Amino acid sequence: MRIDRRLTSNPKPLRPRQPLRLSLGGFRLWLAISAVGILGSLVVLLIQILLFARSLDHLPAELIIAEIPVGGLTRDEAAARLDSAYSVPLTLDYRGNAIQLAPSQVGFTLDSDSMLAQAPTVEVSGSLWSALWAHLWAQTPPPPDPIPLQASFDQQTLKNFLADVAAAYDEPGLPARADPGTLGFVPGTAGYALDRDAAFALINTAFRSPNSRTVTLPVNNFAQSPPTFDTLADLLRADVRLHQFDGTVSIYVADLQTSETLNLAMRGQQPLEVDGGIAYSGMSTIKIPIAVTFFRYLDAAPTPDEQLLLTGVFGESANTYTDLILGLIGDGSGLIGANIVSDTMAELGLQNTYIAGLLDTLGAITTPRRTPANTRADIDLAPDRYNQTSADDMGRLLVMIDDCAAGRGKLMESFSGQFTAEECQQIIDLLLANEVGPIFVAGGSPGAMVAHKHGWDLLPLNNVGDAAIVYSPGGNYVMTVYVHRDEPVPFDDANRLIISLATAVFNFYNRK
Image (cartoon, rainbow, N blue to C red; front, top):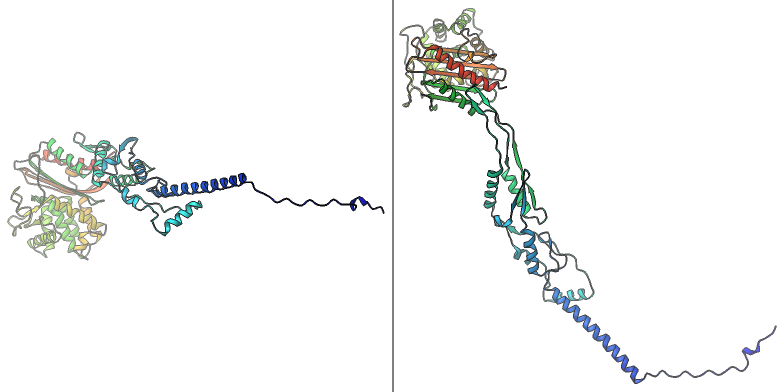
């Protein structure tokens, strides 16, 4: 093994390290650099302090007031931004028509001072230094809570504005109207109208949103309007005038489906007050209250003889048979029976209907009654003192009979246990068996079943009446008509008038 002796022979001695010496010029340079660094740091610190101090005059970053970002703005700048956002006019859409509504038109006012007063601030206290320290270390504070809108407007001014919009844009349509030439009706037209309450609520919401400044106004649509009882009343009055009838006419109509009623009167072709009723001679229509009272006190089905009398009363309008029925009611006394009939009507609230004598026995009378109708000072048709009614009384009685036949109504309520549905149906059947005609209401109701009782004076003819339940394809109703004229009325004229009025009512229920 060979050893390289060059590694061990005569090594050179190490040179001693020279000490590091900084020249005066180098030291000065170092001091200058250090001074610049310190000065720069102080400048940066001062700038950051100035920036922090400036930030104290601005709203916190990410602050939202009334849905508007206002972080970093001064309070004046924030107020201006809020005013700008909330002063944008609303666009109201009414069925495609654009309507501008500036907030100022209704006195819309932002309470900017109150909202800005809620903005968080750094008070001059120990927290100030904490905030400065956080700023220097770029620590981001949590976003402040949003501040809700505070604003108001004049609600009445907005309501007035919506009323003006409705007046300008609503199309309410036309109501149906009477057509006297055809005894029918001209249909109404469809329409629409602003829903003001709903529109108010939507606009109130839009005023409080900086983004949703368009409102589709709610509109209610109206279907074609059918004729009403008011329209029917117009037609009936026009028809009386077309007939140039200068006497007194009373008409009562009751809808048997809805219970709606029409009660009107005319005298000399002018409207006449109906409150309290108008007293007419009852004529043969008084036989309806007599039949009601007869069945009230009937304990079993009518005997053959009683049925024969009833058939004669209504099928032939026989007054002699009527007096015999009154005798049955009064246990042998027709006058007592007449008083019982009158009392029964009074118990039903039909104060204007009474009979105070027999129909076919001269001089067989009792004391006449004072009624709201025959004591009116403004009208006196010189009705029969011993046999009276009014159009509304007789109409209401027919409604009670129809209700009773259905097992309900005032007859059963007022006289518990004294009426059955079958008995009331028998009364209707008797009225359906009226063989005189077709005249009066029956003559104006083609295709309908008419249960009615008519009546008129002995010549000269001054009074005519008809009281009917009409069962028609388009609806069931009660109609009563009473006609009076001081001068004699030709029968054909009275018949034509009542048929025409009945046709108008029939057409109301059976419109094509």
